[in-house]
Length: 387
Image 1 (cartoon, rainbow, N blue to C red):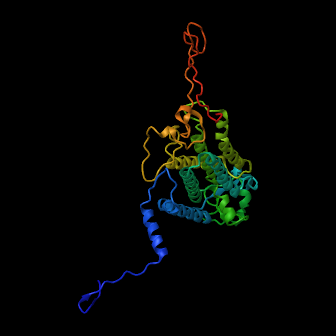
Image 2 (image 1 turned 180 degrees about the horizontal axis):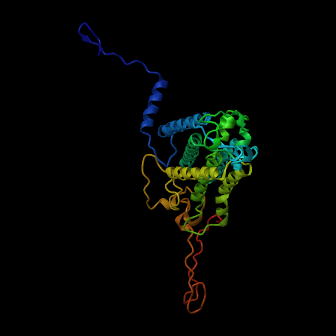
Image 3 (image 1 turned 45 degrees about the vertical axis):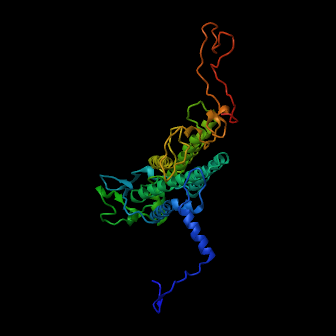
């Protein structure tokens, strides 16, 4: 309320404002009304405004996964050691589960190298595609979906590994069990004929190495590398249109499956160095594949529909197919009129069916005046993409 002096109302002058404050206020007001369109690159403020919740979720999920990884397993997993002769009660020395008695060997592909490969290889393919496509929203959606796939699949497998786990093939060599350390309780030398023991009988490595030896299921290596490989597989298929409405070139098929081959080799190395059992690798691969499919579909219009699987999705409005979806320029190939930058008159025409002329017996249809018809319609514009 304005102050009064002697019954006369006085008008309070507004406080002077700093020019910088006025500028920030105006920029904020303009940000509130800045249009969010997939056709333009947004300002950093608008991008942060529509992405901050994802960033916060990524930080929370990452912190949870890292916290669980650093904790000891909550369950007390029991395991047998050697066979006891039922007649004499003597220890025969025969290992009950020899599949857990392999010698410990360093991993061929370490955990840090597996993570680096899972990040750098997809980013390499992304850079190659973006040289041609040059789309902010395609770049944004790829990276966001890629983080979705890697982080959620990793958190998923860490939770299972922490709560369930399993013995690695080299568990006995890491544990180096000493049955003399067992006490006749419900946790050591327990079960039928006191066959079952816990990690309390381990005389070898303790702490993280021992926890890791008891957390083999599922494989974190295979989860990470399969999530990355399948995600880039789906992205390359959408950009190259390998599985589309025309016969694509073989080099596209070879390139498409290179990430899958790399993932299989990494997963296979885990059996060579006896880091994981086959079912650990299979479970980890399934987790990675499921999350990569889920993440890709969240940020792109389709997974297999060749007409729209290259189109990044908008956060503020639903994607509706119309007559323009096939003319999008967010693809790598020029074949079959996929790039909108080419004039309609120069787009290639797909080959028509081969027909046989009854009169002349030619495989290529010919008209009665002797001119060759367009039984095979050749390219009218000739794209610069060989396949």
